[in-house]
Length: 117
Length: 117
Image (cartoon, rainbow over all chains, first blue to last red; front, side, top):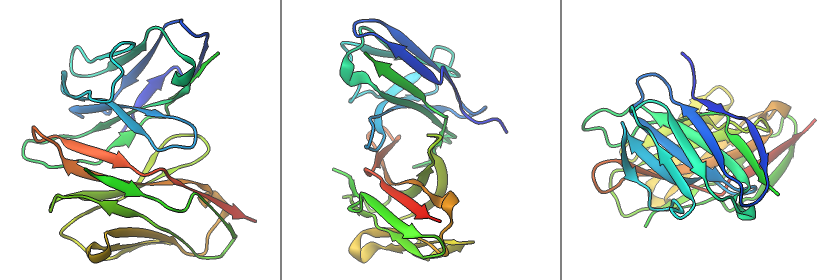
């Protein structure tokens, strides 16, 4: 079974530029997550989708970050404009969600390492 | 609010020694799930184990074992006869049901384990 795919793996940009990351979850997984992991810290949830609807974006800096999952499968996370403090690894995860289930294991992609200069 | 504390920032052990990684959590829910993930230098978070709050039976899987104690809100992880390949950052995570029925996951800050040959 193929895992969670992410691209690109690495990205270097200058501050105030824009950047986009792509994620393709495990086939059949209804829930998709974007996390930000700053060096030396644990992953922090940015946004969570259930199919193509947002269920939690409380920690997403909406003035510069946006995400979409138009067809309920793959997803794009965008930063515009980027700041120095956005340098981090952006992790995508997916989980199989079934009605009535209170939790499901998240499976992670390899991440995109973003460096903002 | 849920919280996960991994007090050990870094641990170094000599190969073949046993090592225990500590995890303490806080939650108001009676139903919750606990996870351990491994993050090797490659960066991808690898799922190791998931336990629910109703199952305090300790588990052993090869060289890995987990000790879940609700009375002390702890979910510790032990590696027996450590190997160099065990060198990684290990994250403990807590999942609760968020409003709307979706799960809300909080990660600890991680423990970096270095196994010295």
